[in-house]
Length: 86
Image 1 (cartoon, rainbow, N blue to C red):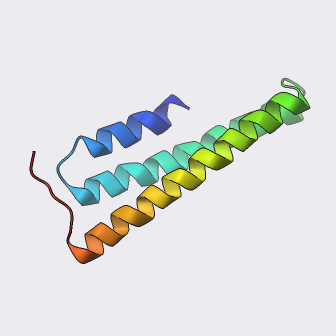
Image 2 (cartoon, rainbow, N blue to C red; image 1 turned 90 degrees about the horizontal axis):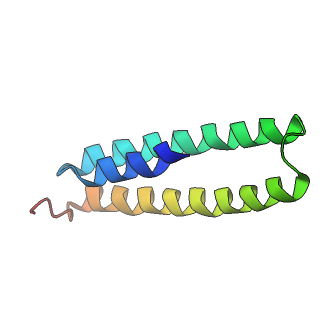
C-alpha cells in the first residue's frame, strides 16, 4: 500500500508529465496488487468481513480518484497545458 503514494509522489516530483503519468500508472498497478492481497487475506479468514468491506470501500474510492488524476493528466498532455517550470 505504501508504494501507491510513493509512486505518485515520485512521479509528481519529476518535471516530465510523461514520467508523472508513468508513475501514476505504476501506482494504479500497485493499487490492484494491494487489493489482491487484501482479498486473499479475506478469503483465508485472516480479516473479518467488516474489515474487508471497509478496506474495499476505501480502496475503491482511492482507485477511482487515481484514475481521475490520470485522465486529467492525459488531457494536459494532449492539450500541451502542463507547466514544467519550478
